Image 1 (cartoon, one colour):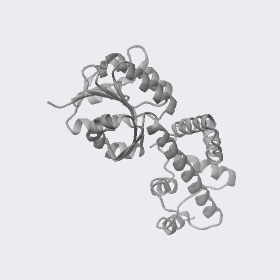
Image 2: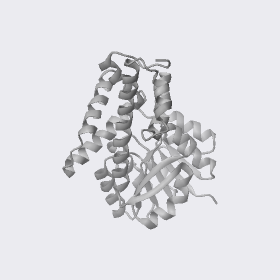
Image 3: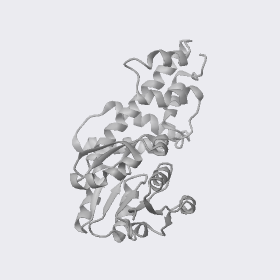
Image 4: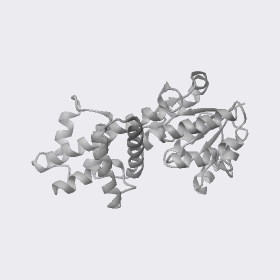
Length: 298
């Protein structure tokens, strides 16, 4: 008999992840505060739950994929939350990108109830969620990780245990620093090229194979050139991640000047109404300062 998995949070990332698990043969109990994705997956064979606790009942493992720390805390520890429905010995895997201190709080509450816990945030955006190629950064007990790894490999192309509970989200924060700084630097390079009258597409093609080349450049450069800012990963979510970065850095007394600067840029874009645009729209902030618009053909 196939393992039954609970899945809470069927947004831009969660729904394709849940669908990949179903395609791989797992039986799913699904829940989201929005009814439409629950109904959609139910027509494909999932069992619709009426609460996070309902999704966890009868599930060997329950995955949560939610926007922020407060959402994970509420969905897992709150009334009718996942922990209420989880049986001792089962595993809760929070794949949300949240503050490491919140992961540790949730992990401790789970341990008190005899429930195992992994924090396992992801990187790769909507394309990675659809393709099942996400990078998954996991924190928790090694034996629990080993038992869950085959299931995680269904949704991820690179699944790595990085340490104890909370280490997954520390790793995700490090990831988000690098992604944010890469997008901002790429934006500056595109704007400089445009302002100088050099075709940004030719610049992109010239440098992509050199030391400046990166997965970020390959994903976001074409979007900038196409003026396509449909969200694969929303600005407001990256702003949230950098807020968690800076909060954690303050707790550890670690100065992060570039991260703080990009966080201010994201805040400006949110104020301009671009909170739901893709984070490649950091380009707009740099374009506005330079009074130029990047376009193919220079």
